[in-house]
View 1 (cartoon, rainbow, N blue to C red):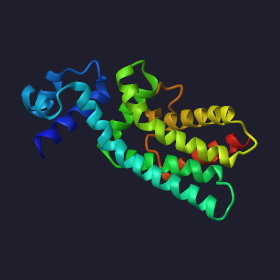
View 2 (tube, rainbow, N blue to C red):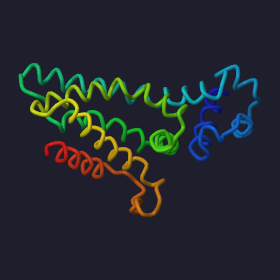
View 3 (spheres, rainbow, N blue to C red):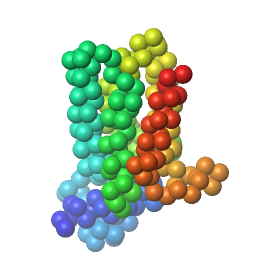
Length: 204
């Protein structure tokens, strides 16, 4: 394992458990078994290190999302008929859960994403939003086509509700007992339930 990889893996775990601002560079270097100069050489700052972790996970997710959303858009043009809500939402949701079902690293990143969505930490949130918003706008365009009688403002609200349900499913194991129902593993069946729930809500 390279020094850069060691640093990223150590930081990812510590950011997940302690949060970005409460994790010190000393803690990262100690866990990675490297000195501070190695972190500065490869990343330059703690924020750049967090950005690298997001890019490592989020770039392949977004690439697959864009490919799938583009296929849905192309299909609707060729047929021609509007895309369905399910096609659009499935193209966005499934690539995300594929990563977070992939093991410990995906699990740590899932917690970091949960923190970005639920905690008042602007550094983490801004890095997250910068990477997700262009794809969300692409998704919103498809949903507007799928719901032609619905205003864009209403589509935006429905999408916001959908993303809330999605984030709760991703990070529910970190929630208080009132919200966590005891199902640690997010299976493909749960993803189908989520998509079905969102589609029915958007159709109202």
